[in-house]
Amino acid sequence: MEFRSLEELREADEATLSFSSFGLGGKLRPEDAARFQQEVVSHPDLAASVPLRVRDTFERLRITHAYGVLNYQLFTVAYDQAQLALEFALRERFIEFHGDTARFRGADGPHDIPTTPFRELQKEVGKHQEESGRWKLVVRRTGGTIPFDGMLDSLLRWAHEEGLLPGQKNRTRDRRLREDRDFVAHGAGDHLLMPVDSARAIRDVAEIVNRLWGTTTPGGRLYPAPIQREVQFVGWSPSETVMSGQVGVPRDGETLDPKAAVDQLQNALPGGEQIDDWNWVLVRAVPHDEGLMQYDSHFDVTTYPSELLWGPGTVSDMVTWVDKARPAPDVVDVLDRLFVVQYDRQRLYLPRRPELVLGLDESERSGKWFLIRADSPVDAFWHACNLVAPGSGCASKGPCQQCAVTTLRKGTWKDVTDALVIESPDLQPLHVPDVRVSSGLRSPRYREHIGDGNWTLGDR
Image 1 (cartoon, rainbow, N blue to C red):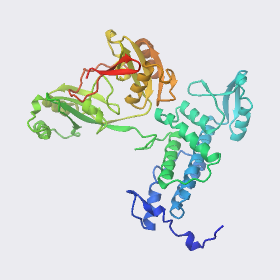
Image 2 (cartoon, rainbow, N blue to C red):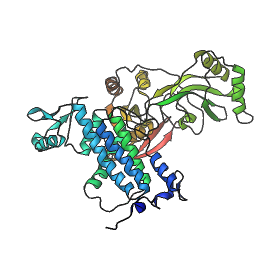
Image 3 (tube, rainbow, N blue to C red):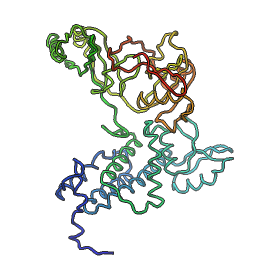
Image 4 (cartoon, one colour):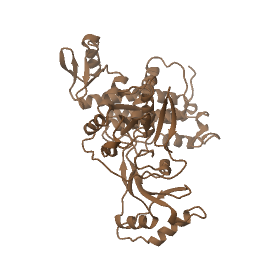
């Protein structure tokens, strides 16, 4: 070992100084590098509900990352330890969730196994892993059972099944988490990672841990807090020019000047366009959602959930309605959304919102239907495409191993709506006007299957 003086140990590692908020480039001063590397792991903090043992373990990750300014290799150490810290947090949550005992079920009936010490639970369950009498963990939320051996993979599966870790894309990330953990635990060998790898791993662990204890992360990558929707206008002209933007809803006690509002919109139009020739709708949607430019009230084309509030109509009527109704913003969850997809006469339609499907007339209910849980309508649609075209390998029931979706039900309209009622008992049928932006760039409402996995676009 090469001994270093205390002064040498305090010297900044030159490799770290090249990393800044602008990426790789000119070197930072050691003081600035130290502050920057602490800032990148300062958010999110762990929630107060997270136990102290888990909080202390997480804080060691942050400290190790911060000391990477003095020794670049500590970023690799912090990354590797983050994989183990996640497994530790899942074990602690499992123990807290179940209390003194966890229930398993085997061929000979139920067994209540002490949860602590956790290694003893693993040993006891491990004795009964032969296929004939295999013990499985009882999921309290559903009453079903899942394989469980106490390792990271089964802990993650348990957390998803209990609803502690929502999100279909997050479910597909489990494989990567397991691979990273196994790489570290079973001989990672000599490897070197960057500060960005360490920082992302630490922030991801914070998001997962917080969600395990019921807290979401504002602006989070994995488990974001509910996103705010604002009142947005969408307008389109006879020449198929489209415009959208946020509506300035007057506050209580304020009045809206209709003429000024109309003039402001007129001034925003392209040269030569007359505002009285345009059609307008009002929707509650996430600002800057690109799907608004091809808005369709009957099908999901926006990235985030959107809701038709008014329209279509003239700009004057729109302004009058806003002044009278004073529509307010709200917030929506964006993970584990429900979508319904129809396949009828070789046409696969875009996903619909469940309440719109419940409200369909009898003449619109033909064909085969799919009820899909996904984080976006695009994910749901492409999975349905794969189900219609055989040979894709996509699962037609339950979680798909290829797509970030879960197929909950397939069959007739009644089969799917019966399942919807079970999934969301408070859902009510909804009828809205058939409103669709007039533009050559809008999404076709369906694709037509012409065989051998080939499709044509239709109804543009």
